[in-house]
Amino acid sequence: MSTVSWLAGILRELTGAPWCAACHRPCDGVALCAACRDALSRQEPIARTLPNGVPVLAAGRYEGALRRLLLAYKERGQPDLRRPLATLLASVLRTLAGQHAAHVRRLAVVPVPSTRTAMRVRGRDPLSRVTEGAVRLASSGGLDLGAVGPCALVVTSALRHRRAVRDQAGLSVAERFTNLDDALVARRSLVGLTVVVVDDVVTSGATLQEACRALRVAGANVLGAATIAATPRRV
Ligand SMILES: [Zn+2]
Image 1 (tube, rainbow, N blue to C red):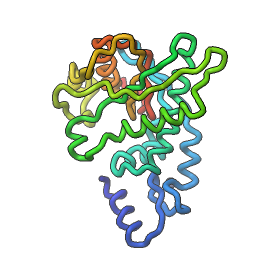
Image 2 (cartoon, rainbow, N blue to C red):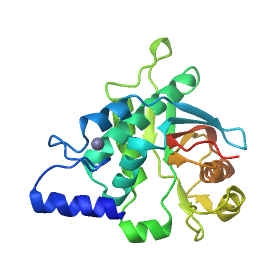
Image 3 (spheres, helix red, strand yellow):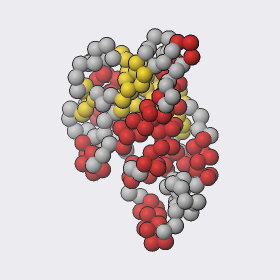
Image 4 (spheres, helix red, strand yellow):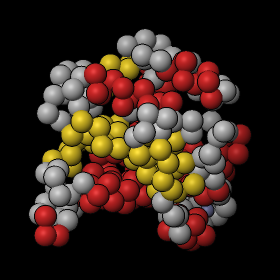
């Protein structure tokens, strides 16, 4: 937990005053202040392509209010921080489903699993919770994509780590790909399943590329990847 976030938590406890989870300024009794909510609502989708050719769509840029909200949610896992992130992810899931609506009636949404270390530290898998919320939001009222009819989105925890990996933070792009090489495996055969992979942030693309490899080995048809945010492009 960052010092600023920790101090904000202490102040909130002591004073009973609500503080914005993203900017740590006093706010009007909700998790995010009006300025941060506004910044999130103005996010523009970012399209990327993984080295293996798989398209990635991110809901926004990993900076400012969105970056701080993601970090706060990972630390605390509060439901009121989860909802704005799920809303952003839902928007890109709807877009991806719409792009393939002509030939896909059922889309498995596969979150990248947390590392064993992260699960030990946090005792939960924050990305899975956001993904479940996003699929509920994207499907609310039915994900009817016009003349082609409805498409069902289903959260599918299809992947697990088969070995320990290092934290990707601080690694070079080449080291990130090496760190994750052959690190994931499908829990079962995925033959016949059409899939979108989900991660919170795309940086080098190493995690998503490894997830795509493991899903394809198990027989899945991987259409693309969706993330909440994208970092500035790395060369
Ligand atoms: Zn704020």
